[in-house]
Length: 227
Image 1 (cartoon, helix red, strand yellow):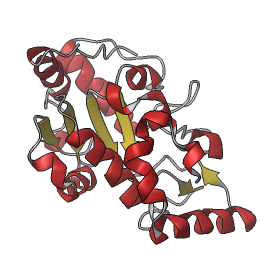
Image 2 (cartoon, one colour):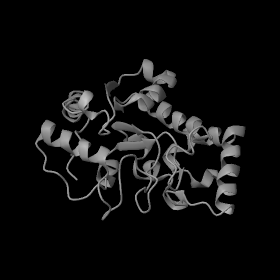
Image 3 (cartoon, helix red, strand yellow):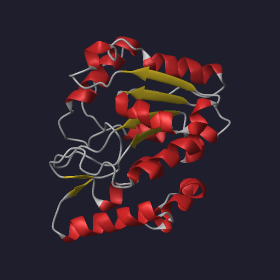
């Protein structure tokens, strides 16, 4: 990844990370995987989509995912989101169930969350790539310092934001970000929306209405969660 690939608003926060040995090693790893004929999701042009669609100064809500979907045509650079025409994955089905319960919204016809991203919802995965068919395959390959720095950049801002931490991976990531412990932000925890854990407290958490109430109470516009 080059500095020029970074969206402008994120460059001051993320350019220094690109200079580290860990990020240089990540670039070499990805190049070697592609040279070996392995398929990596999402494709090159979509890997920074979360940062491109949501400038740093526009972030109002942060939703942290683990890594991209590893099936054909699914991942397009936004956590939990899939491209138009792709079957909605089970975790996103449960997110939509909670939206219906919390805000009375109808179930969307698709799982493309780009509209959220354009409103200031940073849909950021912990790792921004994955090998096809191999969930978690690019964890601990170097993405973590980069995405940690993105979360820290939001946490350092004076403007209040909401961090929705669903599941242990998101909660562990937030715990690594020192700046998040003292900022003027709302941090909400719940189990992951996966069918394996959603019934343990994600369904019924009412995070969407809580996020909007907090934003409005702090002079920031609410998110229109409709798809």
